[in-house]
Length: 130
Image (cartoon, rainbow, N blue to C red; front, side, top):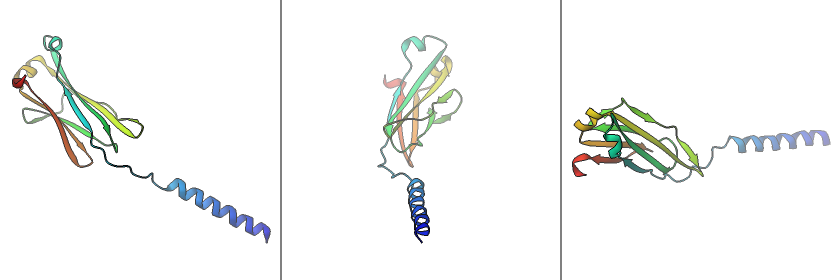
């Protein structure tokens, strides 16, 4: 009978151990991303192309999506978005929109739009305001 009890105890311990491993981690609070848009430098604009940098930082949970618009139209060509990186439970990523000098000169309003946890956030750069 003692051997049967040990087997039962081992099964219970195994069951508790597996259940603990299978529980999903406690979801922390949703933290909206800080979104910053950096325009191209004057040195870069004097060259053949211009790049705008959108920085997303310190958000949770992961899964922020980035899109770009130029004068109200979505832009997908010339966009490179990094993978999300995590530090201490907060995430960050960046996205770069690279345009030809001609396209840069034609445009007026550049918007980096971020969707995180169903909510939109954005940062914009309006050339005529600078």
